[in-house]
Length: 141
View (cartoon, one colour):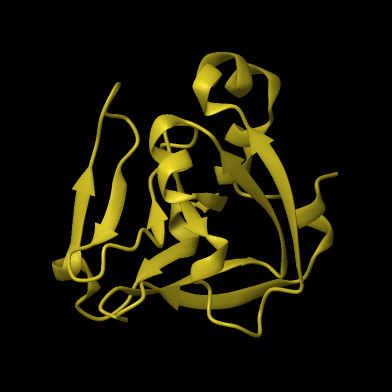
């Protein structure tokens, strides 16, 4: 059983620095955060947890403030705010059916515990095969 399955599910809210991008996500109060060292994640300090896409919702007019960057396989969609540049969430290559949520972009008060696990994005295929990251965008039973 993974860490998140043992935790209470709550509604987290969060977004970017300037608050132009806002969202809510239904996720456990305890999360497993993936710290990735691929060329993009390493440079921006990406540490995220993954949820099924249907557990994530953009709020208000947030979509008009988002732009997207892709590279390599163009599977991952690195979203960021056009105003402040913060990536508060993105669509990861490992979980194209899910959303990667930056744990540091969650409003305070709903996260009770964060466990960090390394994802070796420099050796993406091997790390993907050796991890269970793809399971985190699947609905928990």
